[in-house]
Image (cartoon, rainbow, N blue to C red; front, top):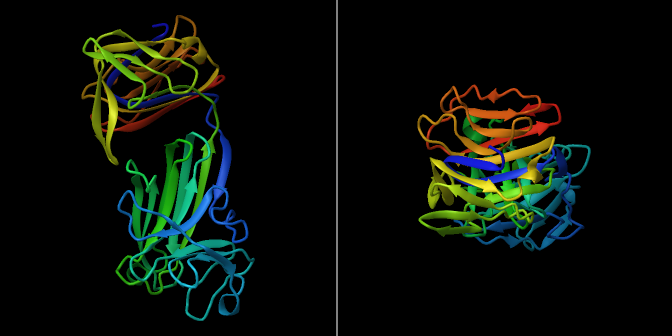
Length: 371
């Protein structure tokens, strides 16, 4: 099986990264907030959109200032003197509780929709290609009053954008403990955006202050192999003959047998290019030696067929070294991750559903392996 990759069903994305998954960067919507650093402020931008129909336009707020009076100490980004929509921040060590009833806890960020359905948005822009963990907690900022819809969107201002999460806060009906949260791993290219948005929920923007606690964390590692079904694909003889590595290491996948097909498949966030395999199709890697590492992380986005067993997503294995990531030889529709060191197969205890897209990750870190 040296230098060999065999695939089953559908692959949309495959990446091998040097080293185990580890943190290399962290952004925090509250800790990074600033009214003096300008807009954009580093990776963050503050603005609004009239709707969230993709692609939508983000209009940047042009007025950043520190409030006084009833809201003394509160930092705001908004358009001119228009009160809403607005992004707000309490950088102080004490809660800010104005007479109209909203509450900003110490060191908190919030936002408020506009009167005509405008969404207030925190936008984060990726500076580098890689995997990022996106986490957010939304909660009421006006006790017993907040009724808003909350969203996380990727590349919302581009045609290929999609909604990652949607929820609602209804403190009037569900009480002040009503929250919405999300945490997940997302692959982003340099320049891609993540938007955290709030709308007026029930159609009235009154008393809709919504707190947001959001972080974005980048996972470390240099891409050594990056295969994207929508790029670098050359077909001849009825199938895909060459699948070019997008990592810059020219570790291209060359057809070895069968006729894998370039196609499209439906994912939860839309239609995407895929390479489709029937179990007898396969490629070999032009530079398989680059993946002979003691520390390696592999990410695959794809789906399997009913009854899939003993087939492979990515293999780089000889008699004494290497790895195999694929389907178990004994348990249908379960993931196998086998490494020569420590040499134990790790079979997923949960059966994967056929024709459902999954992000499958496998990590080899010296003398240990995880999946």
